[in-house]
Length: 299
Image (cartoon, rainbow, N blue to C red; front, side, top):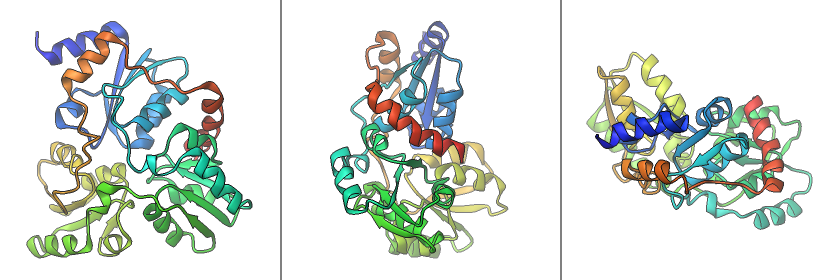
């Protein structure tokens, strides 16, 4: 029996569902029931009837699934797969920021720990951050932890005052404006789409600014036959798979998140066999974080 067959057999036996982020290895995306961005996978986790959720992503994503599905078992094939951006602010640091800006509404990017979410008023993803901020009935926003996404959202909501934390995604920060210019010279007919976690000068040089879910949708809908992609390179596997008639080029080959690549088929199989890599969130933290996440999902 192949490793894929073993995983599929265990999935049936455990009544499990496998969720994969768009940045995961191709082999992981292929074995998953659902592949998507943070918002899509959050919704899938909340809606599934499965008893076990196998979350192939990074730690904050599995935490979010555990918060939304307290009656389900959430396992993570590699619990050490973290998010450097999420680690750039702690709940204690956020409490200090709140003291500096007591009148501000706290909007936490979903790329944050459960403890940080618990200290926040709202959560958001890159796909709904602008809508969340527009929904907030306050003209002062404390946005954490991503200064680049925060700056992008601020540019779309100029009527509001933003206080930004100095956090960022190291993978997206490796993409620079010079890379965009170089790719345009190589592929003059291509459309450039970038993630809002990118630097402001990269965003300014792009044609489209989209979440990973937005990129998947845009690639299907556009008449363009060539697309330059400014995000973690793992998404190109799915883009090519779903759009074989189009060409996709990464803006930078350096845009690799090693944490996202930690998960592989042997780790998935082991985690399902042993059922030991379970992700849990203390109930007092989960209850407070759930309020912010539910607000996000309602937008």
